[in-house]
Length: 439
Image (spheres, one colour):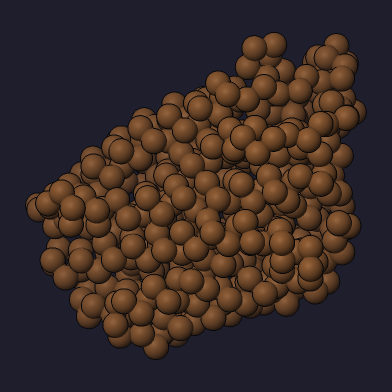
């Protein structure tokens, strides 16, 4: 692997510099939030059954598994005198994701929607993966927790707006939210269009308003790139899972159970809320679409809570350590998912989302803050890409077993998937106790 470092001595950045370098995540989260809140709805509208949803969602984690380590590896080894190291990947991903966001809600058949999910998720990952390494590149160690917290703030803010867009289009502007002839509702379609514009604008703001530090030895970087070659880089990217530092191995277990829970929530919340709380399984009915819109509001609430809590986590971490902060947050999330089983009033779902939001804020910042403290600067993108295996692997596992579990043991009742997710999140919290965090 490369021994070429990037500006070993990093000055502290101002609040607005950290703001500009993180602003792109506002747009990225428009993409992810629209995907998370609406893809199951789109699949069901186009005829998908409940037990088939996890397999149809498989596109998301598989593209992450393929794209993230490769992009992380090659963004470490990229340098352009004008565009820098990470920013070319931000820009390319933004262009592709914007196209996918415009195409997704125009799917007229289930297979088309699945293909669009592959394209959309791969494109979002091209932009997102280098953003994690960006914090390690640009900030000294003492500012990294704040840097990841700023990213979490923009993730939360973007997701609040994007998740609520179908509801806002319906209730504020009178746009139809009911499917006709198997077509995606207009409220969802216009939400994706606006999301595409927001994605591109926010990411390009970071591209044009941030300057990166060049490698200390540019010639050495070029020599090593030539030596490794394309195929050598691909192989090394995937073999990185066997070369993880001890703390990274410990955090990977926490990540596994955290993201298993999140994937269960993203796949099944729409189905669980419409059937368990609203009492309908008919995706063509007005009641179903009312419930699906309310899921968007629920997702907006948990992301809004995350945006607020993101700035409180560094304060709490200084008092009780980062790993204990993460434990507390994950338990809040587990309780939030559990509580949905006992709810019959849609408004009470917002209370459940408070716990989920606390967990989400911590998941987006604490593991990365702990990890960045023990990684060498010249391998930050590479290791962040490898670390993201433990975001996508649990999602693949969830896609493989959740549908089978619901059909075989729980009578295809979707709310039990959320209970399974709650248990998984609490297991993740307990695993924080074994993490050795070098603060």
